Image 1 (cartoon, rainbow, N blue to C red):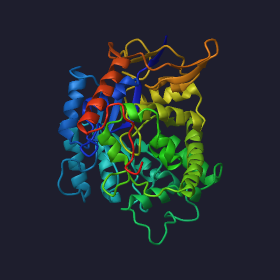
Image 2 (image 1 turned 45 degrees about the horizontal axis):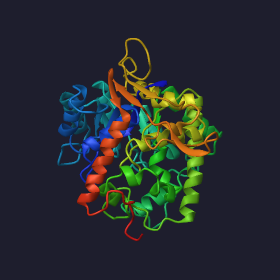
Image 3 (image 1 turned 60 degrees about the horizontal axis):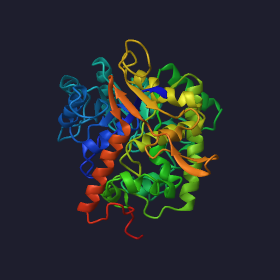
Length: 433
């Protein structure tokens, strides 16, 4: 068999009320795909709830990866944080309550800077989704200079590369609160940035590298924008996606990430170019010694927990990472980004026994890591077979049978289908199908 360090998913959400995804369902899908550490960014179900699951995981009371909890700025507050002093006080409270780090979206610059600096003072790591509502006032180079440790997704990077403008060229009737607008025109951001290899391109890359900044690109969560059919018809949906989550994915004004109201071939072409430029930037950062990690952000936009993480590894490969570089991003680089490389991230004496065992070589084909395994034509028998699938996920020396975990999830889905009036073996369909 082949042995790898346990995988680190750097961008996760532990289910949610709108998706009606129970924690057990999410946790078992992660573990079935070799994820032994998950960084929960936002604590969307509440800080106490998320910390409770972290505690139960640490005590091995539940089947779950190790959890690192990064509550979003303002979590467990009714009023927004509007002053630097309030931001510092909130960060100190999060540290006292046991948070591992802080997640940011958007805030006034003085508030954001104070919170980042206080987090560093409290020895908390930080992550940020640079929401477009804030990037007119700061980009990833600004926040990295303030002390931000990881940048999520792609927002904030193109803005740091603008040379002919300082704000993205939005249409006059653009509405950020309409996610159709938000995501359609987000695909135009890299096309407005400095060209690969230009002076500005090199300056930003070198500056971020000098700051020891970590990129967590989460390519996969946006993949449906360049190929909607692939996202909708991924082969694992019918067997492993809960009907409530499937309903959450369908176009809706209420659900986050459910914005493909009438997604066009033109939209996909723009996003395809967006991916090309984005991937060049991330790959070049890695080539210059910059740290790049693997994060999935599953639970939105047709991405399923666990499966979405393996797809992220494939997309790192597409970006230009060698298979070994992909595995390093999925393991040791994530551990370093969280300040835990002395405990996890590699197979070494003295570290936790977090391991992934599989009977196929993932360096030959990353697809063997999927719970649905990889298709292979057997030339001897002339039969089509499925090979691979994680056999065992080992967390802290405790062995979990990955196939049994997948069977548990499949049974949850079959039960949920019955309760929803759907035949257990029925395919999931959108209302118009």
